[in-house]
Length: 90
Image (cartoon, rainbow, N blue to C red; front, side):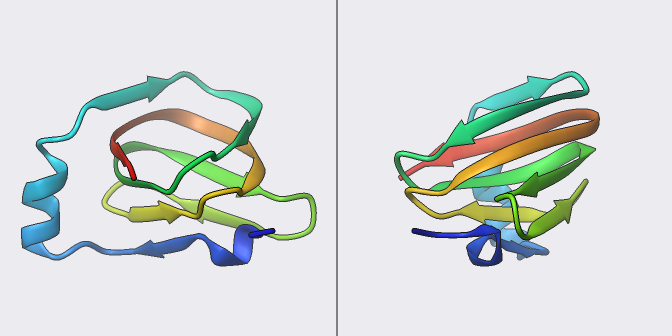
């Protein structure tokens, strides 16, 4: 079972950023919720501050970060500042 340590957070290349801009946008107000990934998700964070935790470990990310969540990850999202992101599953 994947953990928060398996989440990849890095700065995207210019080519990756251009590709991400073609993807749909998801937005969320400050909140806390549980989430289970049934497939891999890649997203580019445009706005906001988020902490994702698996109960033991956590990872933080914000504007400009490219984040890759592994399939089968079960986690809790803590949205500290309203988030806006481009996302892609698969």
